[in-house]
Image 1 (cartoon, rainbow, N blue to C red):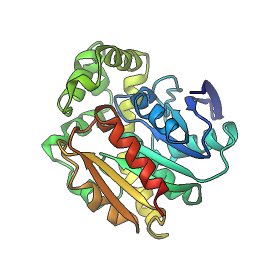
Image 2: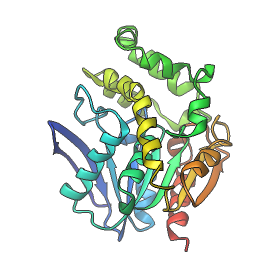
Image 3: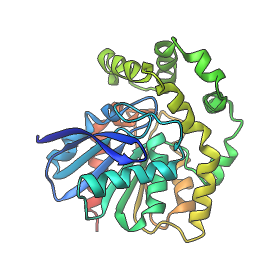
Image 4: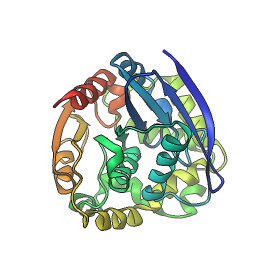
Length: 286
């Protein structure tokens, strides 16, 4: 499998780390969530390459090997980061299959609204979707306690500093169906990534931008629903499986939905075959 790893400048003192695999005629862009990096897609990427895709896996702003600037964590801006990476540095010209999980799904949603013509197929995996009535209704739900905690500026950083391993172990552990899906080495990689200076602050800023994110999608929806096909994926053992298609129908005209019986929230790592096959069949469908 041919591969490329690099860090490139996209302007405004922001650099993005990415990996690219394969040379297929169709390009799939995979956006990770929190508390992961692009490493989240390590099992899915080779499967998609075997299925004929060129696969691009960025670390978004604030994560992994990418810059951790003071601001710009609203998903509209982060979508612009990814667009600049694709067009200016990777010479992607044809519309892409855009896939996002968790926070990455929020970035993918903003990208699809901001750059509609650049997305042929959109896949959103197990995430509350910005600008939908469900996202508004879930405020105050105790299952989402971490959102309010992450939004508490300074105190969240203070309480987690030096305790990243324990905190990430809890964040991952309470929403996993198959604990073996994320090995000790994989977990160590995530802990190392979020123990670097500024990494947890950047992660928390992703959540602090939620109100701005919702406003941006609400404004974009005034131009009409998304017209590209949208596929939502979720784990049956997670809490969003039944809500994903309902949220999607608020924002998109063409919606399909599938669930994995082998996963909870961390679907790309728990059931990569399901994810890869769902993407491939979805993109190939007439």
